[in-house]
Amino acid sequence: MSVTFDFKGKNFVVVGASSGIGRQVALELSRSGANVLAVGRNLERLAELRESSPVSLIKHPPRIFTEQLDVMTATAEDWSLALENFTSAVGRINGGVYTAGIWGLTPLNSFDESLARNIFETSFWGAVKFLQTTTRKKFSDGGAAFVLMSSIAGEFSGKSLFAYSAAKAAVQAAVKSFAAEIIRNKHRINSVAPALVKTEMMQNEMYAATASEEIISRHLLGLGTARDVAGVILFLLSDRASWITGQNFFVDGGYIVGSYT
Ligand SMILES: NC(=O)c1ccc[n+]([C@@H]2O[C@H](COP(=O)([O-])OP(=O)(O)OC[C@H]3O[C@@H](n4cnc5c(N)ncnc54)[C@H](OP(=O)(O)O)[C@@H]3O)[C@@H](O)[C@H]2O)c1
Image (cartoon, rainbow, N blue to C red; front, side, top):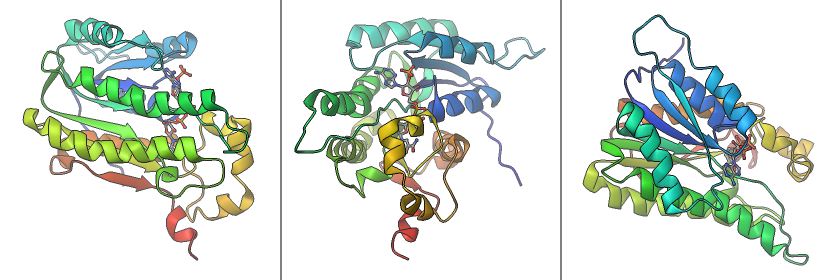
């Protein structure tokens, strides 16, 4: 049984679209008929994504637009310009997904403040700036839907994970506040918190080192794929989730249950 979504004529921004979960979300939105603004730093990967816009005989096929932006340094003006370029081409957005994030271990004793701050900037402050711009009336239609990326680490932390865990917990907490604020424009927002997902992030040496056999075996359904997470994100962006806001969704392959059995 397969579930499909119809996002024909809709416009979405996906940040962190050059790789992993964000890339999968951008592709699936596009294949479901939406125009997508794909944001990231890696120009080559963004270009490759843009080329994969579906080919179609219909008059206005959905398009993937790309914008190179470093979320750690992007100013409010940079975000506005990116949104202006996109919305002047396709119209106001119907939502957005923020998946940009970096991984790193920051033990308290050999504390790497720069790495810890970069982790927070990318997962948390970047998401705040993204939301400040995208929820402006100028850029989004009333009733837009947003999804931010948390992690199971936001709830179940571990040694040397304080920066990553705190950033992901901050996302979950902030979503509750954002939900109460942006409802004035009938917007919704939720977060998604995956356990281990096989993406580029897992190729990070430190990440791979923490993914021990024991940790992997706690995933009752095995490790996740970008597609497993993208499905939940597309649902949250869709009208079928129109009564859901301010929530966090664990997409964990049974990790939480597996940790207690
Ligand atoms: N994979 C997992 O096991 C897992 C589990 C739980 C949560 N998550 C979270 O899910 C999200 C996506 O992770 P993923 O697994 O898909 O990782 P990924 O394949 O490494 O993708 C990360 C994305 O973030 C973008 N990014 C990183 N720093 C950026 C910056 N300064 N400016 C702009 N873009 C930036 C990257 O773009 P460029 O390469 O173009 O810079 C890339 O598109 C992250 O927030 C991660 O923390 C992942």
